[in-house]
Length: 111
Length: 111
Image (cartoon, helix red, strand yellow):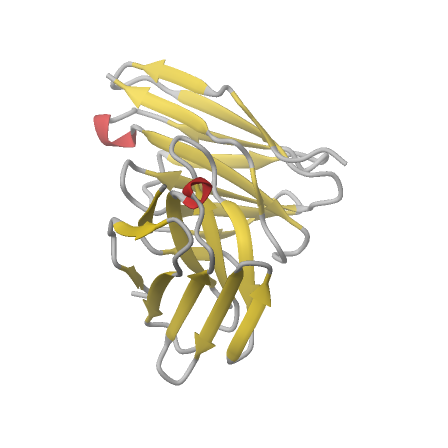
């Protein structure tokens, strides 16, 4: 059984650019959630996908968007990057919103 | 706003002592509560979940839940230097089964 894998592990982007982060969910899990964790803060919920449909969204602007694919892997896209987007981005997978397993995260730095 | 409050710490305890971590929450509808451990630069790792009022023990860890007072706590017995980490309290939002986290409490266990 594989866990949740995220790529890339680290990324440096320039303000205004666009970025795509990827997540492969744990085998058998059909729900993927994305969280943003700024330094010194707890993870903040961005959005959640269940069977390829977004079924929940936190307080993030529309330039944060996502996709879930038939194999339940997922992408997080952020357009028009801002300095405050610098954070650890965490993907978590679950089976119908039960126990969550987190990936190791992607550290995004916007300069 | 459904919030989770934690003292940011750091909470310093000597090796072998009991560490007590506390958390309050505002959403009276919450039914599921979790404690995650997060080492610096790493992703959160689930250490305890609790759903009913009272105590739940797992090895050196005991979670306590009091829904009437809207608090949940984590006791770590025989604290070890390897327990030094940030402990995140979270509850599951009943609507979309997503997690709402506190900012975390940093625990430092000195040898």
